[in-house]
Amino acid sequence: MKFVRDLELGKKVIIDKYPEFSNCSFSADDKGWDNFVIKVDNKYIFRFPKRESSFRTIEMENSVLDCLNRVLPSNIRVPNFIYKNFGVDYPFVGYEMIRGKFLSEELYNSMSSEEKDIFIKNMMNFINVLHGLNIDDFDLDVVDGLENYKYRYSEFKEKCSSYLDDSLREEMDILFNNYFSDNKMQMFRKSVIHGDLSTDHIIITDEGIGIIDFGDTRVFDNAYDFQWLYMLDRDKLNKAFELYNYDIDDYFYKRIVFYASIVPYYGIVYASENNDKDMLEKEIGRLR
Image 1 (spheres, rainbow, N blue to C red):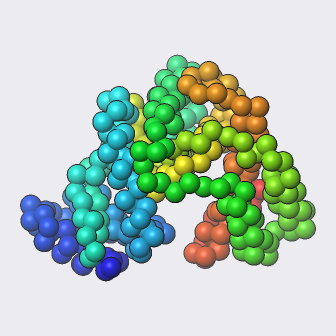
Image 2 (image 1 turned 90 degrees about the vertical axis):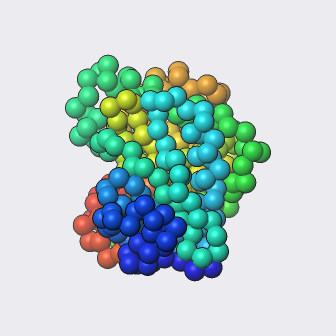
Image 3 (image 1 turned 120 degrees about the vertical axis):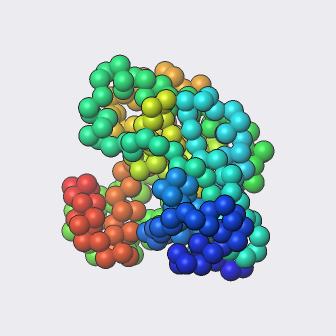
């Protein structure tokens, strides 16, 4: 399988398949781990997977997004892959950009109380639809929480420990060992989850919201998709729980806290691998 990793080749692949783009402007973004991204006329996004595992991810996204685009209310938008090439050479997907403002703490804090309530209601409408999908209808990876976090713990010890002082290393050990020692942390409702709901992937639109980047979509704990709100405004979690269509078990909140608590370690790994000193300092600061 051949993959696109530069702008000129990507432009040629797009135009060869869709000649109507021949007179458009093209720009590239190679910051992502999994995909080489090309913008066309600042209107369309084309994503080219960089490797076979990334191609598998796009195939999984495609099946879920096809369904969501049929069942979500009109004020909640997700990418619609209207351009596709799933062949063995230079696979890609393309969709129209969702216009709006990316969520941020500043944007959220500037909202009125009523606007925040509407935003959370829209987010819960999206999560209810997503978590209501039949997991058997999709060929998605199913995550084993215990095995997944044993792997992550090993990775974080290897790649993060050198940046942490003794106190922070001890906190990491306690956090993971508490998770491993409590088997009730593995008793959850398996759902189709987004897997990476964050301010980078939530857009405030004129009509409502847009949700992008379904690259981590999989079958896992339904609590995982609530950590964005825990980090943004944990006082609103009870309101979100009231709007949730499914059971909130006794460990639901505890699992949200665990998932949110390990986010900085992912950031440290990314920052160290990309030599981003500012991000590295920011993520270590979040742990303190």
